[in-house]
Image 1 (cartoon, rainbow, N blue to C red):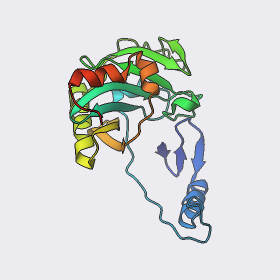
Image 2: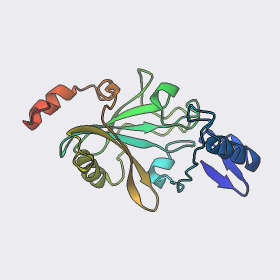
Image 3: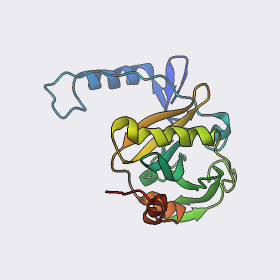
Image 4: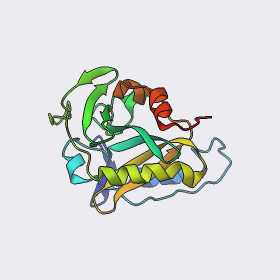
Length: 201
């Protein structure tokens, strides 16, 4: 999301005037998303993350994110999720965002897919995806490797974004990350876990 004056813009580019933003915040505070309409809630206003310029030139709008699967301190597999106009600027694979597998050694995209269909270029910007190098890749792996131990998980999926000012930032850590990443990377997690010599149980 971005802001120009008193108007905000969604990842898809759709405008959100100030009254719409305030209405949404009021709905949150009134418990409209808590499942209990009688409950009061709180609205959390997060700082705006601005994508690293190297990534932002690939996508038309929205914030790309990285998913890194790790076992203890060992990153096993990674992908980047790239928003599209069709995904409404969201990095959600089910909404037709792009899933792109990343080589763990080089940080380069090796394969890109939209809903199971392989592609080579971003459908909206025309930028070639194959061979694109993720900025700050070593730092991304370092952060991902620390996520599981930091929250008491042996196996986890870390979601990381690349901010223009602060670099890689951990957005969340998933105890049960989806395994679609295997289809995107065309590789199995079982063999990579076995290669670490660690016990997955």
